[in-house]
Amino acid sequence: MTTDILRSDELKKVDPVFGQLSFNDHEQIVFCNDKDTGLKAIIGIHNTVLGPALGGTRMWNYKTEWEALNDVLRLSRGMTYKSAVTGLNLGGGKAVIIGDAGTQKTPELMRKFGTFVNSLGGKYITAEDVGMETADMDLVKEVTPYVTGVSESRGGAGNPSPVTAYGVYMGMKAAARYKFGTDKLDGKKVLVQGVGHVGETLVGHLTQEGAKVFITDINEARLRELSEKYGAVVYAGDDLYAAEVDIYAPCALGATINDDTVYRIRAGVIAGAANNQLADENKHGAILKERGIVYAPDFLINAGGIINVYAELEGYDKEEIMRKTENIYNTTGEIFAHSEENGCTTHQSALRIAQARIDAGKKEKGA
Ligand code: NAD
Image 1 (cartoon, helix red, strand yellow):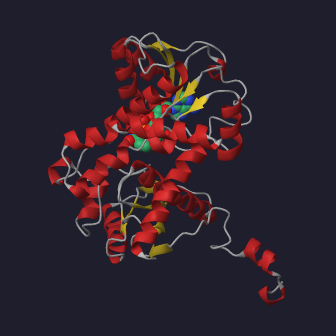
Image 2 (image 1 turned 120 degrees about the horizontal axis):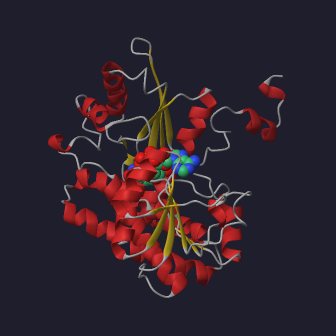
Image 3 (image 1 turned 45 degrees about the vertical axis):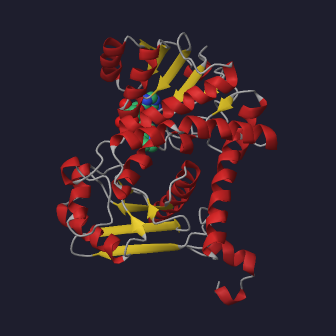
């Protein structure tokens, strides 16, 4: 079959890059290859209207290059909306390195990746994501200034997880106010799914305020440790989605709100740190709305991490970082009001508000 005999709709099906399902008006995609270090990476720049495309680098053992391409396309688009809705002057980008972070990551490979980032002249700024450590960003920093998430000793803003957790806590309070008429969480039953870096700090905030916190994790030792440290109760029921709680906080994996779970959830509020919580943004967002469950959009309330790295670019101090993160409370409230006024889901509202900011930025630039 040759392309000259294909109709345009057929062409779209076979076009390997622009025809990908996840391709969504991305500005630039850079394929990086280096034989000596074994580097195979893709940098996805989704949008730079509001500023340089900032987003982390993920190193993952993708089964296929298509999987890696789709991941970078999807993740970089997500960053555009996250920064726009949070009010940051940043665009959206992300990078993926194909390979096993445990066995294939070397200092030479990281530096080489840094030279590719550098070649973009600041259009893309990198940071950590899955499979990356602060030490890796320090190596990238040796060859390019376009990197954040470096060690505090090198001018970095440090571990973003506590800031992310604080933003989630603020978003949760705003959602509680909308659903229950008060943002006070004392006495509220909250189920935290996944008590890793973010989950732990969130549990700390919640128990400090007097919430009754239930925790789940696949790591039993972690559950025991946190239960002792914070007095949280390890959830013992068979079906965590059907737990009789006021708030469900997904802080482990994405897509936990899906066809299988969406009708079982009994919590009145969903507010957590995990990325891409809705398996199908439109469908599951609409079912939650119909069921009267208030969903705090993940990409808004988990933006503390990006606020933290943005501070490295703007030279903000910790106080300013926390003030900006606290503002997630107000933005979340605005999104609930917008969703009610416009009859759309909270997720759609957050996307529309972000898009409106990008459109205004484009107009201002005369683009
Ligand atoms: P983490 O890896 O430190 O913690 C995740 C925890 O979830 C671990 O304790 C793990 O054992 C547990 N877990 C994994 N699978 C599980 C399952 N099926 N059921 C229950 N628990 C399970 O990650 P983190 O940094 O705390 O991030 C948590 C989530 O928030 C992730 O989805 C991440 O993408 C997102 N997020 C994190 C940040 C940040 O600043 N760290 C920022 C934005 C979004």
